Structure formats: C-alpha cells, structure tokens
Length: 134
Image (tube, rainbow, N blue to C red; front, side, top):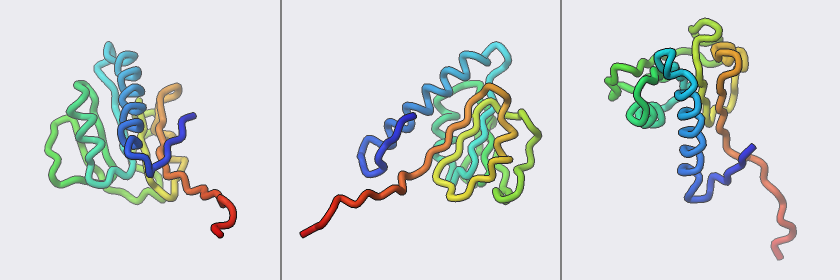
C-alpha cells in the first residue's frame, strides 16, 4: 500500500501515475472484450474523468455527479444519493474510483466485477504530536 502526503507538490502526479498504471493493466486485460467500463464515484467537476477519457481509447466512464461542460461520447453523468445504493447492477464495472468522500457506502462496490480493481483515495487525517513546541 502506498501513502502520499497531500502537502507534497508531487502528490497529484504520484496518484495519477498509480491510477494510470492500474487502468493500463486493466485495459490490456480487457481490450479483446471491447474495452473497460469505469465508475468514478463523487467526481466533482469531472476533471479526472475527462483526463482518463482523453488518455485512453475504449474506456466508458460513468460519473455520479454531473459536469455540464462534458460532452464526450464515451462519458455519461448520473446524479444520485451516495448514501443509498447507486443505480447500477452488480458486476457492471471493471474499475471503480472513489476519492475524498467522507462516507463510503461499501454496498456501492458490488458494481465491481469480481477480480477487478477498486481505487479509494483519501486524505491522511492522522496527525502526530511532534512533542512540546517550547
């Protein structure tokens, strides 16, 4: 397991590198089956989705929170309440990506196909006492 300190300038680059490697691996495994299907839970403005869609061909990415500026043919947006189950059948996705969500409804991860990939990225909220400041 890799841990990255959010305060480092290289955090975004390292996190994106890990995700890209996972997607490359998954895409290579499934290219003969017509590509892979990716779910981004809590995408915000959809920056990660748009980057992945432009980087990889043959990946259909569906997001939970819509981005009105996105009009890509292989990207769809659906808004729903994450506390409830998301509106997809079990085993519908090859890769599920979730980041910076305080509450995860783990039943949402049933949409992931068995043996495929789930990536959860969260802030490290563990603060350590360095001792007296005096």
